[in-house]
Image (cartoon, helix red, strand yellow):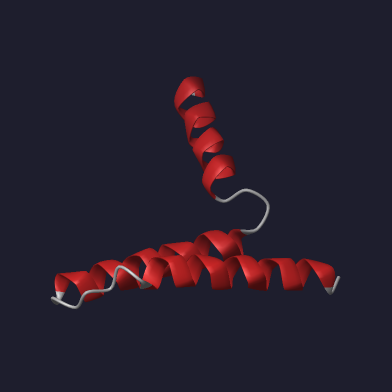
Length: 65
């Protein structure tokens, strides 16, 4: 059980890291891209724009502290 807990904590720290809001926004962008593609909309452009916006928002947020 110790190894399973350690494995889970590693992946949590790797994916979420220092800011859970960035991880949540990225999960939302991935979900939205998948939903649009599933409906037949060509949404390949959405993910790069979302990542750029998330990065810019994160940097701006950190500089305001």
